[in-house]
Length: 260
Ligand SMILES: CC(C)(COP(=O)(O)OP(=O)(O)OC[C@H]1O[C@@H](n2cnc3c(N)ncnc32)[C@H](O)[C@@H]1OP(=O)(O)O)[C@@H](O)C(=O)NCCC(=O)NCCS
Image (tube, rainbow, N blue to C red; front, side, top):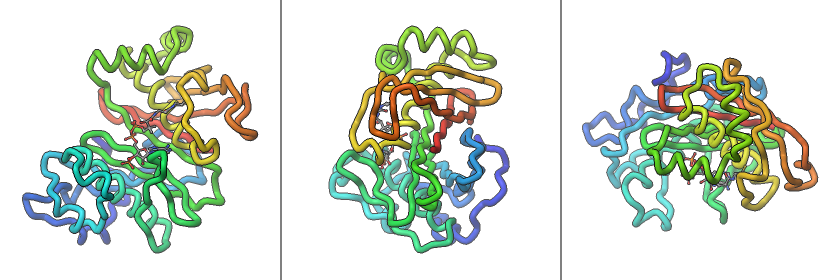
């Protein structure tokens, strides 16, 4: 899925069990340049990406990787446990890459990751990829990443109805460049999810997809513009625009990233 990425983290490989039951393979623990998640902001270090097999998840994975499974996930399906563990492992590694002692992020009341003092970041996962980015907190106001795969037709219809207005869809269609209809759809959706994650700590509450609109798209440059339709808080006022970067990771997979 990814190019041959420089910076494979060799000193963490010892944490990876090479037994057949291992839920991630030793060669799948990678750093990826921030640009590969679609954003070129120099303030932000590379994301940490793990490709994993959710089928191979075992309860011993927590112990193996030193990630505590929170009580609310003890009875979750294996897929959810696996993505949580891999997301937290990616976050832990991303923090360590900053050269500081890492604590695994906790879980906030709205499911947001709670980063240790001095660090902010973002986590995303699909059924077989987990990614996290960690940034020294004073450097940025917020950061959000999101990875989406093209879902089935029913979910695509739901995204069309809930996340993007007909006007937004028309604007994106007119500037689609090389993007297929399905990729266009999940790119717009994912951009809003990245934006949400990146501003949540400042806004402090959930808000709907209609809070921002897609107001621009440069498909070749991998840039999408979001404009606030409403004032969310004093620093996020109606009319303010932000760029979200995006990158096609595979034929059916997009990564978006937002930093402010
Ligand atoms: C929270 C949400 C953005 C997560 O996105 P997703 O595509 O479902 O899932 P991803 O795998 O990409 O990301 C999940 C991770 O996001 C992080 N996350 C969850 N809630 C979050 C929040 N409120 N703020 C920041 N990050 C959050 C978590 O780390 C989570 O992983 P974890 O539960 O294993 O810790 C999404 O489920 C949601 O609720 N969206 C509605 C709100 C929204 O996007 N509004 C649009 C505003 S324009």
